[in-house]
Length: 297
Image (cartoon, rainbow, N blue to C red):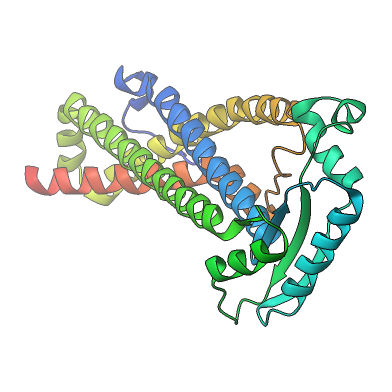
């Protein structure tokens, strides 16, 4: 369907209405905000899912460095024995010191400087989600063989992250709903203004036998044309915004933020926003005209 060539015959000079001049710009702004909301929601879900896949059902055990290398090795071996013997543990492997230095380098400087620091020994632990784990009891067992050992349960801050992500996602959905409501309200009042301006012409059309649906179709097609035009404008502005955000995102250290994946369906939703705006404009204008004309009779 060609949204730009639906007004085959016009009995109403709707193009000259002062209120319709600003409608494409207002709809464009709404589509721009809607596109940002859709992409922001997709980004939050992508980041949350990646973090969840990366640290769900995992623990990190930290063992303070001992006075000698032999004591270090003994403490690590005893800690691994306890961890691997726990029914809730699937895997327990020590993290190589070179890998620890690589992780700390973006924060604390070059590996040569960090190599001389007394860094704790880390053990990566994978858990069975079906088995319960008493973290305090496990810490007590580890401290018997490696005094000062601590346990970092990623699930605690992961649950907080997921709750925050879900809150922000629902917030984005609410913003998207408010944008749709504002767009419908804008088109509705612009249409009512047009009806008031062309009141006399509409009465003449009624006298010569024009039905309400005929008049409503002219308003609806005109609003659809303007909404589609404004939607394309808003989408055109949203494109460079997405590009600028992607550029700034890539400048951040990859260790701090995960890669963002926006699916094809999500991009289709963003690109179809002008069509949705046009469809919304058509239905809103038609409903407003039919309702108003029914009250005039």
